[in-house]
Length: 185
Image: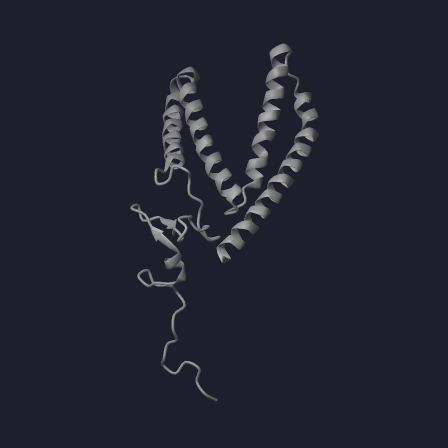
């Protein structure tokens, strides 16, 4: 019986950083080192491969990431001020949480709509939370909001969530299919 590994090592399938391949030929790097789709002879850019994160319209400025970072810092500042009273901490807490939320929603929506990664769970939950909160706040403005209202809204919340999740998941599957076929061409 012959030895399989007779001291010779097979060729590694791992891509080397300096080596060239078909993937390197189809995309270039910008000044920040991020991959950008290569331009075709007609001047149009090729579609990104299914493995590449979609770029923001304001690329190379990492606006969403900066918004998340600044929002996190402002939230921590607000939490530190909470020891001095809620009135001193409330503006910083609200501003920080809103900044983090805007940055996060932008990234998740861009990734979801491009077919890169599904965020249907999060994106379906946000309108449901907004709807539920709006109903409670409107009712609380006119009457003392009973706890039974939140429980009564629960079946409506679940139905709305299920509908939005189904629509968002179908949109992601279509975008993923388009992205996969575009990457092959």
